Length: 396
Image (cartoon, rainbow, N blue to C red; front, side, top):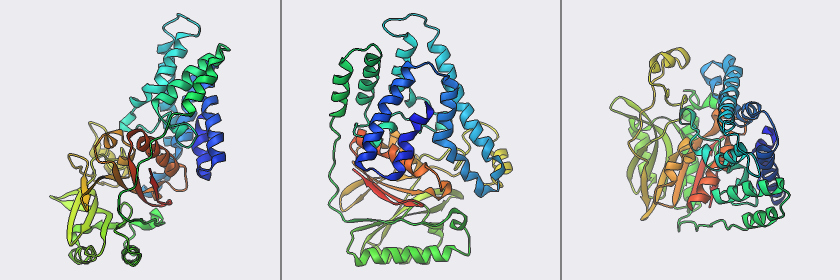
C-alpha cells in the first residue's frame, strides 16, 4: 500500500514524460482504491508512508556530526505517521454502521481529500495526497480527489458509473498562466553542503556568483536569480560586496540568497539589487528543527546538545512582496515555497530560492517540486525556482 502511495514520487525522478504521467495516473487510482477498500494495517501503511516519503529529513544531521541518530530519526518518522493513521482508523471504526460500504471507509475517503491539510506535526505538512496527481494526467485538485474517491467506491460496488467519474476527473482543465514580460535567468549551482559554509571555499562561491551574474548580463537578461545562501555569509556586513552588486544592478536586477544580520539577530534572507538600490526580505516561515526548535520549552538546551549552541533564526512578520519593473513577485525561501499561506497572497508570480544540498542524494527536491506544482496549479501561480543541489525550474 505504502509503496503505491510513494511510487509517483520516485517515478518522477525520471522526469515528466508522457509515459511517466500515464503510469502515475493508474497508480494514483489503484492506490486510492486499495487504501479505501482493501483491509490493511493502517499503522503499517502510515509507518512506511512516513519512511518512504520523509526518510531524507534525517540526512541533514550529517552536517551536525550526528550521523549516528539518522536511523532513529527515520524510525521516529515512521512511528509518528503510523500512530496518526492508527488513531484515526480506531476513531473512524467507532461508528459501526454500514451503508453500501463501511462508514469508516467513507470517513477515510473524506479525510484523504481534506484531512491531511490539518495533519501538521511541528508545522510540517508535506503529506499531501494531491502529490499523487502532480505528475499525472489528472489535475492535482480537491475536486479530482473527490471524483477518484467516489469512483473507487462505485468500482467496489461494481457500478459502471466509476468510468464516467474518472473520465470527468481526467478532463478537469489545468490553468496555464503566462510568464511575466521579463527575461529571467535562473541559476543552478551544485555546491556540496560540506563545502557550503567552509571558510576556505566561500571565496570560490563568491567568485562563481559574480561569473553567473556577468554571464546573465552578456545574455541580455532582465533578472538573474541565485539560490538560497548563494552568498554563504552575512552579506550586509560586507560593504565591498554590497557595493559591487549594487553597481552590477544598474545592468540587471540581481536576486540572491544570503544571511542578514540585524539588531544582533540572524535572518535567512533574499537580497534584491535593482538599479543601484537594495531590498532585503527576511524569511517568514522557518524549517522546524532545521532553523528553529518548534517546542515551547528546552529550545536552548536542544540547540546546545544537538546543534553546537546555535541560535534559532529570527523571522519577518509577513511574507515579502517586491516589484521588478512594476511587476509584483512573492518572495519564498525554500520551505516557504511549499506552504499554502504563501499561495493565498495576490501576486501571481513567485520567486523561490532553495538549498537542497542538505538532503542530497534523495527524493527531497522531487517531492518539493511536486508540492510546488500542486500549489501553483491550485492557486494559479507561476513559480521561478533557483536551487543549489538540483536543477532549477519554472512551474506555470
